[in-house]
Amino acid sequence: MTEFTIGADVSCTDGPCGKLSRLIVEPDSQAVTHLVVEPRHRGPARLVPVGLAEAAGGEIGLQISRDEFGKLDSAEEQEVLPADGGYQMLAPDPRVVGVYGLGIPLAKLSPRAKRVDAEDLVPLGEVEVSRGDPVFATDGEIGRIHGLVIDPGNRHVSHVLLEEGHLWGRKDVAIPISAVAKIGEIVRLSISKQQVQDLPPVDIDHLPT
Image (tube, rainbow, N blue to C red; front, side, top):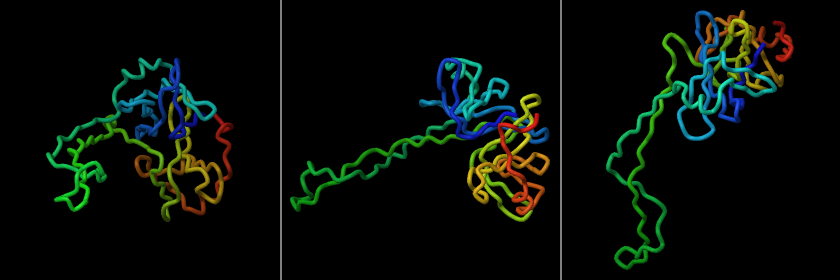
């Protein structure tokens, strides 16, 4: 089994390239199709086909170079909004002569910065799963998403990971996909909180294949 922990470091064949920020899932088949990787430096996140990724030792390796990574499809659309012509107040400037000789320093004025809005791009018919997305049992919220475990053969999700240490002090809480009714920005389970508590501890590195 392959564990994709959201927030894990991602490397290309020629060096580090970013961090895993979210996963793209085809909800009907419950198969992971893409990883969304935030680059180390400025630039849009990239959609990485899951077939290019391997996970080991808490890190993710891509079978492409950093140059090839930079040419992958963008995972977000950025819009730069025009300045509104206003000004924002900055810290008082002691070098400015006081107002009308009263010794009151004038505040510096600066044009308002342009705002950049970013919208996630998700392939049609698919959903994104991000760290911190809520997980609901049949009787209420049970935790937050930490990552997904997939079968490397068919790339289907086998387990949903809750955030470390969130539930009864257990480091890893892995919910089998058979107990998941819906997966997406909200994960809904078909079992209760008590049934989650009763699940045996799972060693992710030794899950049956």
